[in-house]
Length: 212
Image (tube, rainbow, N blue to C red; front, side, top):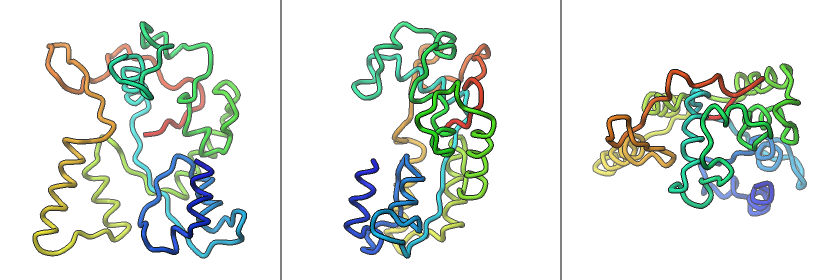
């Protein structure tokens, strides 16, 4: 949250050396509060490099809908407004929803706009921010993305037995315990990740740059 970022600034989180990575859905606010943007306490001596993991927009929208429309998803994930809705109804939703074109609104710093108000200029600005400011990986290629991040940032595993344990932990998190994994019943009745049906409508509507 903006308050959390400001609190991190006041506590000199970056100067403490306790954090190697800052995770936030508010990149512009983080830049202003923690990195060279300054914030309320003057210029910051620290610089950061944004990295993101993006997902195919149609696949992400379908996965989000499956989770948000399922009561079993639990509080914070289930949205009663979507119960009983079809994917086609969700894609044609009349009212704007927070997740619609969220990344375009965030990167273009236009959070108050609705999807209908977004312009091609907003989309192009969001794409340019990613091109110039971010190291981009793909969710569908998590392992390859991690290797790219390791090479770019110089991340290294420790030596000895600890390194093997760290690598095993990484593999487990990437492939078996992925935090936002959305498991659904397959058409054959088995447990697994089902791909979107061929009839999935284009998503999102209008100018889009949907998060991973």
